[in-house]
Structures are given as C-alpha cells and as structure tokens.
Image (tube, rainbow, N blue to C red; front, side, top):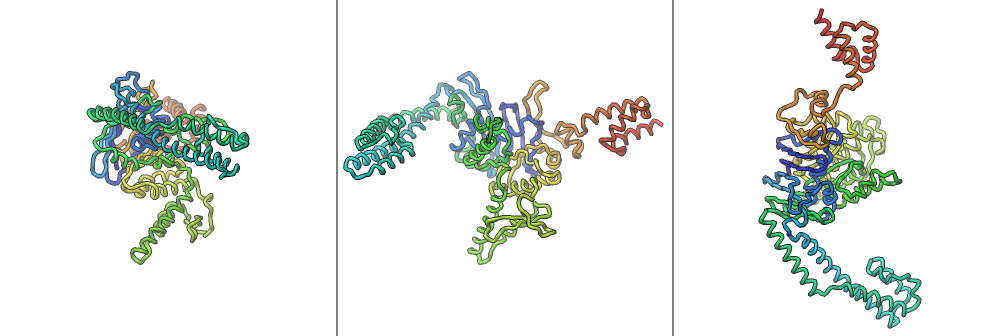
Length: 547
C-alpha cells in the first residue's frame, strides 16, 4: 500500500495540510520536519487513526478519543470535510474522504443506529437473563427438597454474584441468610427483579424491525450523497461519515497494513483524557499507569508499537519463527532451511563488534564480544544498539509487506552514522513498504530525496498552527549546516558565537583588529573555534584583499 495524498482541513495545530507523495524506486522514506510543537507527531497519529481505526469496531474508542480534538459546527445542518486520502493498493487507486456533522444532520435518524445496536445487546441480555432464571429455579428446587447443603448454596450464590448475575438492588450479606427460608425469599426477590428486566421476544423483534427501517432509510439517503456512516463521537452528539470508491471490507483489510511506532512518552491523542492526564500528574506510579494504558491499547491497535518493549522477547520470537520455518522445510524437502543462519547474520550486522548467542532450547539470548570472546548480557548493549535491534525485529516480525509504516522520533538514541544509514536499512528490512518519519535528524533529511521532504511551517508569525510545504527542487547544498538552516529552520552556529562574530567584524570593518577590545572578543571566539575556521579564513582573505 502507498499513500499518494493527504489533505487535512483543520485538526489541532494542523491547518490546510496538503501533502503529495510520489512513488519512486528505492525512495520510499518520507521525512516530516517541523519545529517542536509544529505538528509532526500529530500528523502521524492523524494518519494512523483515520486509516487504522474507522473500519474495525474494536478500535472505535480510540478514534472517538482522537476526535475530541476537533470543534464541530454548531449549525445542525452543516457538514464539514475533515480529511482526504488517496491510496494505491494492489494496482488500484483508492479515494477516501472523511466528514463530520451533528447527529441531527438533515434531520436523519442517526440515533437509530445506536438503538439497533442496543436492541441487539438486549436480545443477548434476554438470553442471559433467561439462563439466570433457570439456574435460580433449579437452586430453589434443590433447597426446597433438601438436595443441597448450606455451603453449596452460598457457593452458588457467590458464583452468581461474581459473574454479575445478581442485581445490586437485592444484594444481601451472606451471613444474614441463616436458614433455608431466607435463601428462598432471597432467590424469589432476585427472580422477580430479573424477570422484570425481560422483554418479550415479540416486543423486541418489533422494536428491531422499526429500528432497521429507520437505519435503512438513513443509509439510502446517505447513499444518494455517496456517504457512509462510520461512528458517533463526542457523547454521541456528532457523527463521522466517509465516502470512498471501494467497499468497507477493502478499507477494513488495508487498515491492518498501517502501523505507528512511537516513544512511550509521547502524548497520544487517541487515549482518553484520564489516561493522558496521568502522564502529567505528580502522583506516585502515574508513569507506569500511562505506560499500562498504552500497552492496553495495543491489544486492539495491533499496528501500534513503542520503542520501550523487551527486545529480547522479540529476538527469541524471531529465532523460534526461523526454527519453525526450517523444520517445515525439512518435512517438505528432506533438507533443513537456512532461516536460523540468515536471522543470525542479519541481527549480528546490526551490532558493533558483538554477536548474538541463542541457547539450544531457544529460551534465552545472550551476546558475545567478537574479539575477546567475552560473554555479555543485554545490559551491556548500548541504548542505540537495543533500539536498532528492536526496530529491525518489529519490522521483520510484526509488520506486513506492502504496508504504510509511520515512525515518530525514530532517530532518538542512534549515532549520526546509524541515522544516516537508517533510510537504506528501513527499505532493506521491508522493501515493499512506505515509511513516513517524523524526525529532527539532519542525517535522515539529507539522505532522503528532496521530493520526499515535507516541512510543517507556521501559517503566520501570530499563529501557532502549521501548514505543509514541499520542495520543487533540490536544496542549495546537501551538507548538514545547509539542511539545518534552510530546511529545518534552525541555527547551526550558537547564538552567542553569532553575536561575537558580529562584534568582531565591526572591528575588522573599522581596521581595529589589534585593539584590546577586538583581541578580547577574538579570544572568546577561539573558545568555540580555531583560527582555521571558515569565519577567520574569510576575514584573512578580506584583509589580504584590502592590502
């Protein structure tokens, strides 16, 4: 899969975003660049949410959280465009647009969708309530015929309580039930309340038919506008709609080809307000609470990855997978495959002067120094080595081919040489995928094709919002200083040194370089750079030219 175009009307700091990605051989890495707070991470999360979540029900809660970041129109008749994507998948061009509106848009019965869902749940609840009544009837019969002991009665009532089968309205302390009469009275009260919650099948079926009719009419009206319903959000007061040239099952399929890798300290706008607040609380153990919230979300957002996980567990998994593949080939052909050997070689290439050692039972991993043959533990690896290993294993073992892989702050902890190599590495590890990276690394930016660069810049000096810019031609130069200055909008010379340069040049222009003040400033400059620096060389050239 490949994202050809992203358009975002307005979301948090992002405004009037329009990004075009051109597919080129061996150039599938697209860096996103901005100042801190410029919206890089938000952009990646936006893409992940809208391509990964709206078509799978178990992910709805996360995009609902994310949609708290928009301000819907107060006009109940208004519909607003939120985003537009153009995708390429299996040779086909897929268009996908998202809109949001008030739930009373065009006076349509959007709440009928929620009602129908609730009635479906009530049908299931009806079955459960009937089963509870059967259990209580049997228990009552056993008590009346003395076929059950007090201990077993209590155990059964406690079991029902743990299952949530007994109403809180009739919950009694078990010690207050001293005899069989009390048990029977208690069960009778529970049955009465349980039966009161039952809805007859006929009544329920009629309500379902009525709700389906409203939903059918709603869907027909939306169809005439080429729109489809996605979900309710903001306390069910607003709706998310979409239009596409492919069916929902295709969108659901490609949603599993979108991945997001991010630090576990990143503010993830798809978590709930309560979960996000734990990241900024000074209470004890709140960090672990935020971390656990992220891990919990990964149960549904299987495309979400954080760089903090146990790399050893994934290395073991990679070797176990390779072992199984080699064994399968042995059964099929009579000869073992070379996946274990290949996996070992690839992992060793990621380490500096170290090799991986896997035990014969595939239950533990250690490392060894190449030169001294000294056994090392995982803690002897640098943060950068562990991170590079984790990224490699995740991409190789957990992502699919032909995917969109979004990576936030991927350069953190990596040596500049590794940052420079990362673009090539990613494309080798998953040759068919598109990588979109939010980065502050001039090495990664310099390695990418200029057409692949996306810069998020402030709309104006008075606005905190960012829009997108792309390049029509290559930058003036590819050296890191030029990249930092012209692409990243930063300074490669410290401000203090710039001021010293400015002050010293004043003395040069006035032919006072031998003055005491000029020599003092020159001494301060020499604390930053030598007399062979480009600054002093330029001044020497100017002075020689004057003579």
